[in-house]
Length: 292
Image (tube, rainbow, N blue to C red; front, side):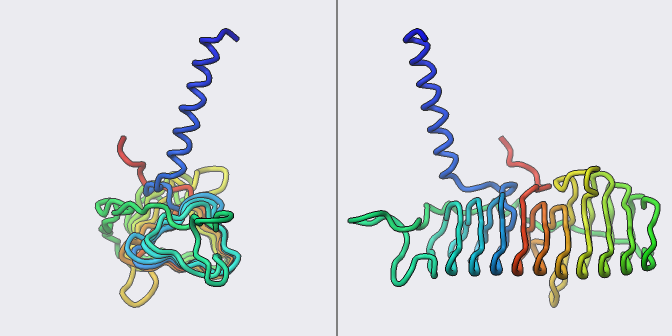
């Protein structure tokens, strides 16, 4: 290879490496978060976040024993238990068992470096304008699916309470839906056959093994979004054990609880977010990317 070409290739390689290094040290934007809370985010034991960031805009993130976050954890305060692994930490303070007895992470004066401490936290973590609640105007007519039955695809529109009984299937044609509440009984399914935007005035409840969101092989999780108003006395969005969700839950005024063993693809935004043991959350966000 001629010398000038080598120099150009070398310079290009160094520039790309430098850009990749800079990107690895930058905080994620809103679309990069798999889980985002305002006041608190708690991941239970053995929770896995194989892709996407976890963060709290104003409060703290708490990671229980053996939790794994492949991407960044971003919050003013982070507390970790033993066996926790994270990609990067952007925080004001970090504490907990991952650092051993009396040893805090970060650089050392002598000897080998300790485990990672906080990288510089930039605030606001997310532009508050992007986290405003979305108004919902539900209808009055309830939609109830009897146990172990299925529906033809339901057209977009305004509805009251949606109730899907044990083992039943509700198909949504796709488009914009406004509803008062959603209740899925055990092993019930509510699936979008095309891109869906669902506004929920009150709460969403999934019992054990219920499924909600994008129909596999027909639509992607990032094409399904639920804007949930919530309740002042109960979680806005709650799943039972071993539920499956594919879509983005956006509930900035409510709390979100993902039951044990939940398989979740999309993004979760709530006032507080609790992810119980052995759940798996993978980012595939329906939220808009930041302007260029």
